[in-house]
Length: 367
Ligand code: SAM
Image 1 (cartoon, rainbow, N blue to C red):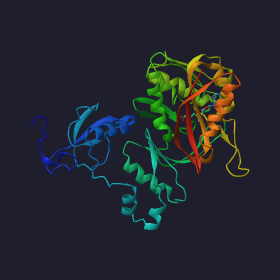
Image 2 (cartoon, rainbow, N blue to C red):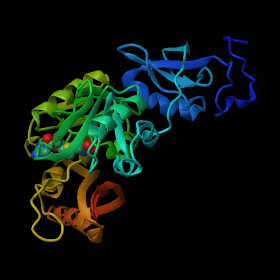
Image 3 (tube, rainbow, N blue to C red):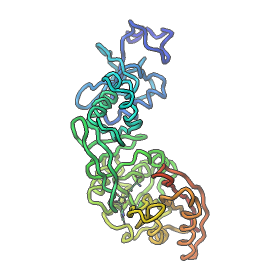
């Protein structure tokens, strides 16, 4: 008996804790909940048979089968009357008397971003009820938003509050990077999670980077946290405000030089250039929708800033049947206009953009 818990009970690893075992929970700050759940799960102590429970305005209780030793938590407490967790959304909707047909129309996926749950409802009509059930499922969240599109050059989101407190502002923690944002003003793409982490992995300490379409700091923050010196450009006033705030929030304000400007008007010299933008969709004419002001139209400005031997990360939205000749061809063409050679280092699919179209990134060294 160390902390009142009998450690050798055989069902400790993953099975439901034996009846008389105290129901332990790790206390963490709400914005860290998703990250902490993943870490506790990786550590093998997360108990997903019980509900995450709000502890107070700042913190939540994450059920654990034993005191975590690797994951940083504020405290470990014993829960009185722990609540069993219905495994998923469908189980909750059935428990609310939904018909199988209605359950079939319910959203199959959603994203928890800080204290906000983002949902694409498709043809599901009972949004509010789904929102309530999702808030039960994710005790760390307090607002459910229906995702509409993202439009215009400033990538402004169209979201609607469907349940909860309706607070569209949140702080999202991802791989240790903190992103403050307001979903009513700026976009956040859950599907770019891996790419955001990757940008923090590819940079070297002290490396000089230009992030041409910085937004709230999606790529800038992980790169600066990894030691890079980032020139970050963002034209949208709301996104720029969060960019500056997030640099301070992550303690990297000394390594982020932020400009509220058109990236073509910022003179920079960089060893790495990030072009995280694939333009604006124009109304469909035929076949795939036409896009305008795509990243390739900014390649000249990117190559002007990129030092010989530097690396560019060129994002694009590309139909499956144009992979990889179109994005690579555009990069080669822009470089050859400047008498420069391109060595393709990597070609990656970041996420599905729309039917038959992929959000991709080409990594290339330009001599
Ligand atoms: N790469 C980000 C991610 O991973 O989620 C997405 C950034 S968002 C799609 C593109 C950002 O570029 C928007 O915040 C938009 O305001 C900004 N932007 C668009 N055109 C710009 C320009 N010419 N100069 C500077 N910023 C621009």
